Image (cartoon, rainbow, N blue to C red; front, side):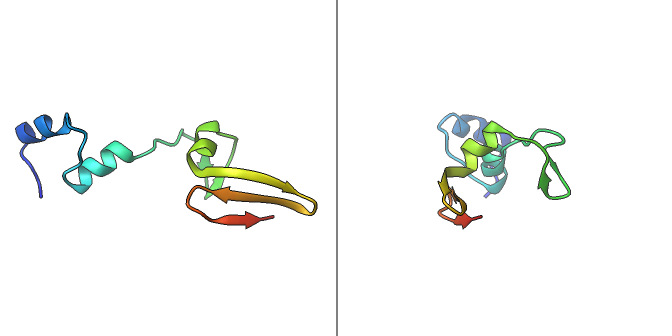
Length: 75
């Protein structure tokens, strides 16, 4: 459902998203230029760590990374 611009301005003050464009505009995370090249992260970015990682556990034979999405990867 698309709203005309006047209705959208009034309703956005309430913090609700009324269509996909609103949702992605409010939730999109801007990734700094040059941080991801060819699908690989090129440098450490604390904001990405806070956004995606739940914790990192050091193990005897490596480490385990738990993402906020509930996935754990052991390396």
